[in-house]
Length: 371
Image (cartoon, rainbow, N blue to C red):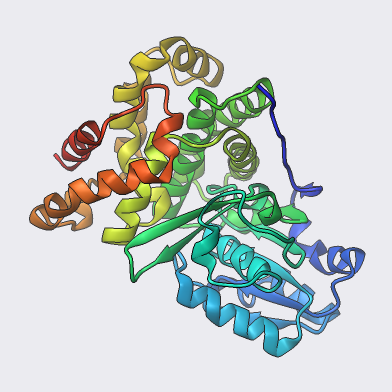
């Protein structure tokens, strides 16, 4: 098997790394960047430092799980500014939206034609990604997820042209994250590491990164959740999240993500949270397909022999809500379970799972998760 590895050309990690965006813009030849920023970070030190050094236009219209309308609005702001590059500052939503804007600046629309794998013909504008949450790892991936609300589809697009040119990974940006978000994105990053390790597309390279990601996340997630000021835990989680992104970007995700995207599309559950809701049940289903891989991951990361029990404990201890607790109505959920299962299979991710499910088995898993 030929393994193709793709990572951002430049990565800076550590406290204060986010303040180097202007210098990286100049190095890349970006003179008029568009700053795509989560609204609450608009006046952050990183955003102010960039604005003080370069002529910057700001797009702060990012929403959780960004949709095509957000991308089009940002693209219009980029064009009005005469922008020649982008800086994304925020969670995975800001970075994913900026990736789509960068591609559409140089490639013809609509974005939907690029859904799937390796379909983007030309490089986009250069992008500098600055994550503020320790979760998605989008700063290190060649993937974007954009919602098409007209079709109730979360479009997964994977292409090397989506890789940021620079990732600035500054754990200090995550110090203000609320507990609920810390839990959701933290378990999301654990899902990335675990799915990358058990994926049918795993390689020696992705294995090493996935194991190290898990070894950072497992012992530090509860600490980061319990104490927002635990800088060592926050730094470990931010680094682990980036490594998790590298791992799954080069090994692919599997069934958890395949089932998670329809939950977001139909019920507007944030991506990290829906992954957390699904992870224990899907792992229980998948474990017989690669028991030795799950044991190796658990041994290396400290999850323990009872992998499913450990994942259930994370959800319980970090107060991850169930679908019912989140407010999903039983009748509405069961009415679309069949279509969600079909959408999950169509995404291709379940085919990477160590135990490949049928449509009926996915429906059964949705039933189990709903309870």
